[in-house]
Length: 110
Image (cartoon, rainbow, N blue to C red; front, side):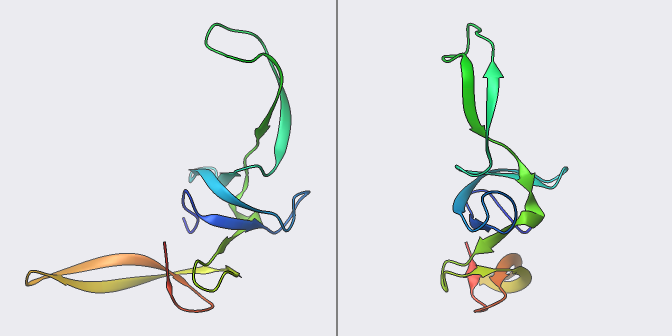
């Protein structure tokens, strides 16, 4: 998946369009992400011994990964993500590593 945990993203669609946040959780199977303080919904929670708060609780709800775009660290703009394979030499051994690349400035992301 092109979006990973702790990536800074901007929301493209929905009620929070244009807002930025950090990715808290990624569900690859369903193609959804949870972004910090974005897409907040209210849930009614019953009291139980392991809950510290009962009543109406506000929490972030998952949104589709197609509705967010990664923000590049170098150019500070929303961008698409490409993948590239780098050859790394470690002590005479050749190692291949897959990295994420910003499509705007062609720099490595995270």
